[in-house]
Length: 421
Image (cartoon, rainbow, N blue to C red; front, side, top):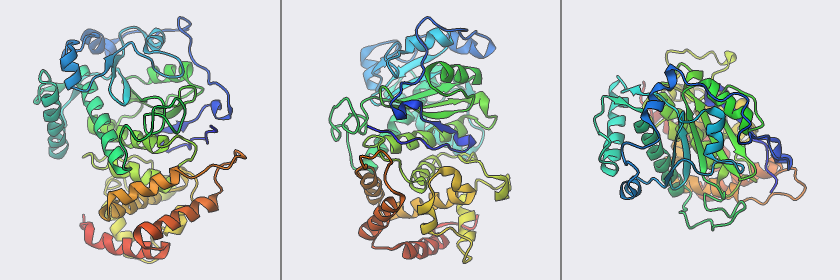
């Protein structure tokens, strides 16, 4: 399968990279025992090292693990024929907690975090902790802090809940894609390997991982396609961005995992249109209560930092003026997320927000139809006009709208749906 290049995203959302394996080459990866400099422990590592590899909330009990949806702890296979033990040899033994669920393999070196101060993020977290406590009784539903193992369990729960929601969106279940070893017939939305999530506390650990196990040299959080085992990774380092408190990190992880699920659906032979991928990722991530936004406004966007998170309000005001909004025809013609700009991101989100009110199943059908499109054998990918035609055709069939009607109905809807502020 020829894999199209992943498209770079803006900072906070993180860069995206596809290794040279898109052209059939295997990416560089660290080999066991060949680490030039294993991670050294310091104050940031104390909590994780003291927490130890034994999960205090299940203590390795098979029944407790099953109830919590835990398949395994490390070591286990990771990506591109490497294992978590190989990663440990490079980054340092005991500095990462490893956990595997039904659809994800997760590594976490996050330190403890305080509970949110603001009321809505605190309420949302309380609901999550209550659900976790029901599945994992030893995990308190009212902790004073989120310790390293508790944070790992929270992200495992979040990832699996998101996966279930996405499967429902596209009308699928675990039996929908077969059990093949090649896309698009793999078990995990069409891919043969589980999705990967790395939650680093330290930026230096992220940089070392990327240097040794990918073809990318970077210190920025990233979405990456491991080409040998056909797995999507999202790796984030909290220290790389001062804005990543717990609710912000949660939002960012949701945003990035949705991007990976959208790209991985039925294999990565067809890259999803930016407006649709970004719109869906923002729609899910903005359900997390935080002022953090998963895009970086450009200087030319002239966005005020104080209210840049008030997307509904900004879209509503724009829609009151002719010429102030981006037409659907414009959104269709953009090829990369960078082209969207701040207004493109918030209006793509709002378009999905509107379509979701008309039935999430239809949004899922739109995405599924695009991902099922046959790829020309010449390796050049689907021509832009063919992709645009498929989207306008689906718009007409699923919602009985042409692009101009979509523009009009969406603008009218924003005036009723979005409060003044």
